[in-house]
Image (cartoon, rainbow, N blue to C red):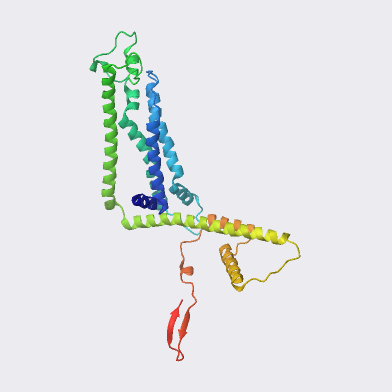
Length: 330
């Protein structure tokens, strides 16, 4: 149970971990879909290969676009690529990094589907049983009145009366399945070798400092957008509350019953209103909100926080009668 909590905390730690978790879930969903998919080969020479290739290619395409759709890097990359320059220049390296991260995660589920289909072998048997030389195996039914191609097309169909429970069908199926699994394991081995070589060779051809900068600013774009969205939500909530309160105050009658409130309650109300005013940031009209959002999109602030970082702070100092400093607090 503790390990499960640690895994959940990791996937909730940042957007990159969340994207990894979503892609892993898509990969598991692809495996579950394949195992629950009722694959029925047409057993016709002109349709076997077309149907099999469709089952092997169309679902990975759907899974790929789903991976692109649910990946947060996609939105951040498109926002950075399409935004006007304004006060902030664009960094092509950040866009390339986000595109690479999005592409790698989106390709996980399709590759899992293709590998599962190859290792299982049923689709490969349906597609290429017609291409097998029947003279390599004994027991070919030759008293059915059908030509060899149509007989070979019925190999994937276990319930067909011509090849039902025959050693010929089982031998051909094993033969084609061996090729399918060989292709699957070869692709998996190739991907692992390429990934290992890329990880080992990359430090020799990549500037580590530049890679750190690219990773930092890509994370910054994600965090900046999240903080802006959260601030907009808080502002919208307080803006809506002020509009509602103002509406009811305008509609109430002239006669107002005034009750005395305790001192602590008055202070609490004043602090609450002061906090709301701080959240509104002086933006109290629809035109101001529209202007602010328009400025955020067309003219994002430059990456310089020197002014707010070195803002003067109030310092309180306690001194004794002789003027000697006893304690100082900011």
